[in-house]
Amino acid sequence: MTTPMQASSTPQKKKSRFFLGFMAVLGALFFALFLSLGIWQVERLQWKLDLIARVDARVHAEPVAAPGKDDWANVNQADDEYQHVTLTGSYLNDKEVLVRALTERGSGFWVLTPLRSDDGTLTFINRGFIPDTKRDPSSRVETQIAGETTVTGLLRMPEPDGFFLRPNDPARNDWNSRDVKAFAEKEGLGTVA
Image 1 (tube, helix red, strand yellow):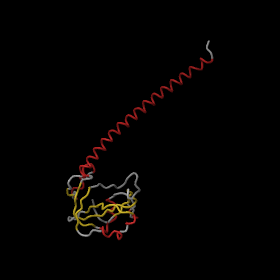
Image 2 (spheres, helix red, strand yellow):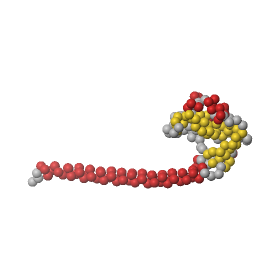
Image 3 (tube, rainbow, N blue to C red):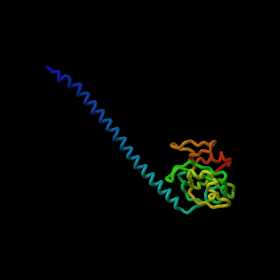
Image 4 (cartoon, helix red, strand yellow):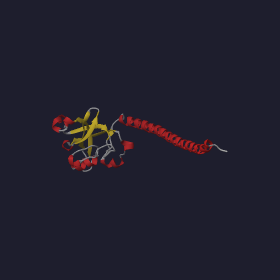
C-alpha cells in the first residue's frame, strides 16, 4: 500500500530530473558561448597587435611620393592607410571643408583643404583641428597658405559614413565624416583623392 507522500514524490522526481537536464544543457551552451567569445577576443587581440605594428611601421617609415591619379584605383586600406607620404602643390583655400570633430581639445572641426599638384591632381589634405570659434576663415588668415607648398603626412582613406556618425548634409555644408567624393561634388572639383 502506498501512502499519499510516496505517490506525490514521483512527479516531483520527474520535474527535478527535467530541471537538472535543462540546466545541464543550458550550462553547456553557456560554456560553449563563453569559450568561443574568449577565443574571439584572443584572435581579435592578435589582429589588433598586428594592425598596431603595421601602422607603427608605416608612420615611422621614410615618406614616399603620394600615389598619383593613375594609382588611386589600387590604393586600399589594408596596404596603404597610414603610409607616410609627401605631396607638392597649391592649396585651394576657398574650397576648404570643415568636418565636425570632438577631441580632447573640445568641440570643433577638422579643416580639409584640396591641394592641386603641378599635374592638376587634387588631393584633400587634413590641415588639423580648429575650435568652433575659428570656423570663419577670416579668423585664421595665417593658416591660408598661398603658393606652392610641400606637405608630408599620413595617407588616410575616406570615411563616407559611420554607425555612430550623423549623416552629412551637403546642402547645409554640415559635414560629419570624411566623404571626399561628396566634398568634391559640393565644391565642383571633379575627381579628388
